[in-house]
Length: 327
Image (cartoon, rainbow, N blue to C red):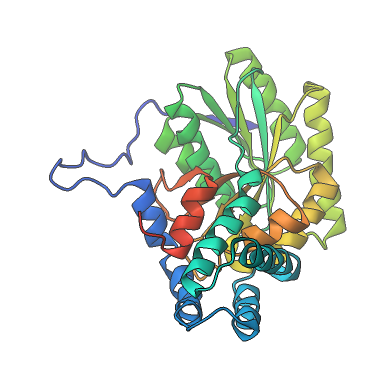
């Protein structure tokens, strides 16, 4: 049988923060979260941009640094071509000027990925969440629930990962924390859980349905077919749904992220990305690789475990935090 879990209050809500010790702003948390990446990237960049002049050796070393930062071959070559054109056009002669040009080129590359998610226009607005095991799907769903609640929207969660009891329990815990309904089933067909959740949301006039799915590797073809089945069942309930298909990516996997985007897009038609764990050992250049090889809107990025540590992606803010650009 399906379980309906709901709480009215948030038992895990943090205590009110004293005005004397306010929590750091998102911008500060983003910079702190990207500190490992920035240190890894900026050590060679600082050395490069402190050289006496712009020459072929500097550009070759910059190319190696960008490749090491997970930018990928395509994005790295594009950035180098842009920089060389800028050097010639604007007659740049100092490495400090080249650093500024790199920041501008990165922003140009990443800005098309900056597309906010609008969950209006449909009720319920059905969001299907996919990704491999360990990418942070369930945690992202909990944070998304809080995000939509802050916009005044009602939310329902569908525990479509019926294979792992731990996933259902984790999602239920997020439901309790946010005070929202979670529809779950101890075992069985994930598509049936999502089907039931959408019908329940319709009956209750819920604004947003967040549907979890079981983690799977793109190489497991039978499991990829199963997630495609979940999408087909959603469309039987509502021909216009799912209205958003979000793929959760662990930023620490580097170039494998590109292959995941391509594989999941082929199976279920990915419409947006959530990039998590940027506060780990990730090298933030993977977003540049995605922008060149498989561009999809980056709806949210995550740099922490807090419930509000998942925020909409803003290219300028991200590049500034990545390169440590002074405000």
